[in-house]
Length: 263
Length: 185
Ligand SMILES: [Fe+2]
Image 1 (cartoon, chains in turn red, green):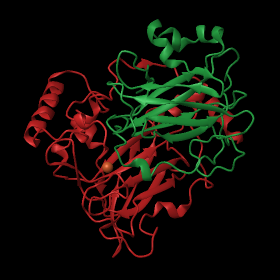
Image 2 (image 1 turned 90 degrees about the horizontal axis):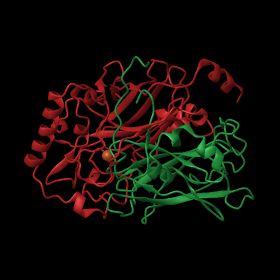
Image 3 (image 1 turned 180 degrees about the vertical axis):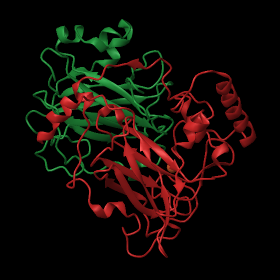
């Protein structure tokens, strides 16, 4: 954990107190008649958010030209080897070898083609290869936990990795994050840029985790949970999960798309 | 209107530092190029404290106002302007890009840098624009700025410096930066 904002990160509350805060927010949300599909920026159970969320309404912008385009990545940027997180070192990493695959589409269901997907994650023991991670679980010299790929023409990404472990953090006393993989995604326009986390089905820590619960709507939260898929699982090699990602709608017109084809 | 509901975002968390930064990530052009400018500033929280675990990305038009659509941001060759860069804040909350002045994408439009902000403690990304300060007429004619309360408009306008621009990002507080949302969000 970081060394700043200790006051915001202080592990004062118990899980029971934290869970009561989470439950109160969710029941108030259920009693309202609006639907939320994204996390709340202002979500006090996630203590580090207290001083880091804007308090004023976001300003609605009509996307201008540069906002209707996204940066472009290609084979020059990403080696195909970067999609396999289990071959980056000498020797096999410890843990459950797993394939995670799915499609990236826009709000109209169109594939996001040849676009960058980045992931990072803890190892099987719940430890990141990061200086600030002080969790006394073993580092795995055969596993860094960083991957990149480009989607294909159907918008499909595919990573081979190790199933990450849950890990403790300092939000409150005995706080544990459900196992997750961080995903960074680009769309076809700037406004679709997003970073999120993918989870594994049936994790007992879901109900206890203020980051997962910062999405107050249960159906919206479940959009972050991958599905076990035996057709992705491979014989005597790796288990398989499928997770599809929907970005917000693109603002570009078909006419503008044509103009973009000359690069 | 979109037919599918978007996947929710989540915080970038504290441990992206060994994963997302890359060599020359903040150098859209090599420092020292005659037309290079610096875009820099500090990210602060609601107590005015620096945010040392934020990640900023910039996306912009080329100097002539054209939209770059060239790969190569992750492995820069020093010659290709991709329009995109990434910078993790330092221990003092500072970030710094080396880039070129974006041109206007339409005649008379006010040019700006687009900035995406991620941070530990920030549950979802934030978008903002950092307008160039020079062209007063263009700024006065800008539709987004016209819709922002006058007392908050300055948070969207970068300050000119001899070497480029300064643009601070205040996540919370009285002088909080204006952050953007877009139709369909
Ligand atoms: Fe994490």
